[in-house]
Length: 489
Image (tube, rainbow, N blue to C red; front, side, top):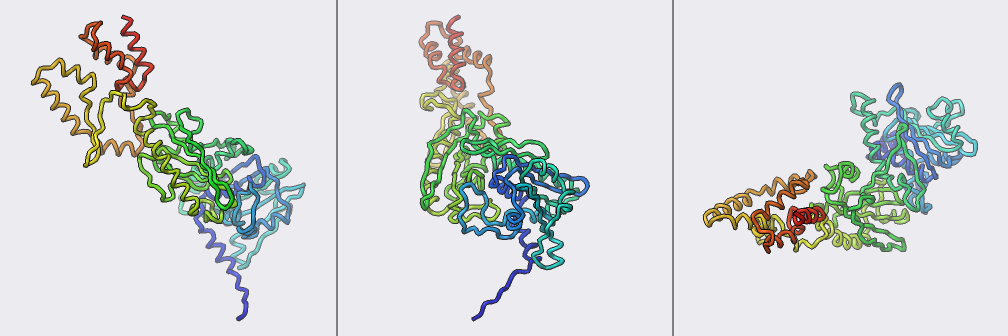
């Protein structure tokens, strides 16, 4: 047996590596990882669609010496088996290169550290021409005319990653400019979500400023932690191979309590249900979200549940993290604990959906509809015990009561359950009784007690329990105000 050195064909391998599956937003996220690992506090994304289009990322991080930058430009610059610092967002030593060439044919990196300015280029056409791993080394006269170099020099330190000849980014598009604009607009929201904890300057993290063509990105919080109706369940934690995994479950408010802006921040109406599940953060950077990892299924009862899972980079080998840091699978030790957490949070989520955030025991509310469970499933019947129904029955003759019962049965049997479920699944916000204003509720209350003597025990019973009768129970404070006004006259 003998050993044979058999290196890969440079041109073929690089072309193949361009198809690892990076999107524009995931490629930019990989570059931002490097900036944050380099202690950057300000990261700018600049792109131009006129002249020769380009995309540039500038940071004010530590910068790299020429030797350090040359090493960083090597594919596989650091083994994934090596222990990284606790704050390092990198993994395979490939992200800078593979993310960049997935979008362009020429990627340039310029860095400034301790007054030393250096630059290197991977150019696909040069690699193909030489059929070797030919890395271009830039002189100062090569660097000076490149975009944003003067800004780097003014900052005194930092790094620029420049994408030119954007063939993949504009592939298949009629208008390159329009394609870049649209993709960067999508990337803006993606990055605002992925790095939201850094953008917000969460306790324990140094705040990072991120902008795109001069417009600052604002953090998109998928848990709506600042909303007063968001439920924060008890924290959980467990250890895997001596490393701590922190879990924080949240139950989002019912849709009826959310503004349009809230819904957009939580992922948008169209994907509200799809984004339920675990949100896994590696060193506070979101890597995967909107999945139960096949430990549970997505349905209406759990659509308000979102669970933050914080993992350290020391457990990467167990999570089988991919190069793009967008796919991860939890190991068995983690799955066992997450399955236990799912059972706990589903009950909270379903209660929020069923009772729309009411804190009262639903058993004491006189509802307009009754839920009936039988062997076939569930159905809804109009509550014959509701004061409005009983008052009407008392005023009718026997034949008229039978006619009323027929009308009620007709309404019940034509209840549009399938259409309602479809609407709720599409996240159309419910209105129903919540649209009644104060005047309408007051008129309804007076109708309930009309014809009753002021000292009638029935009248007193209705007013005393008005706040427990739908639709008055939606706003108990308003119900009590209406009772006070009626009783004072």
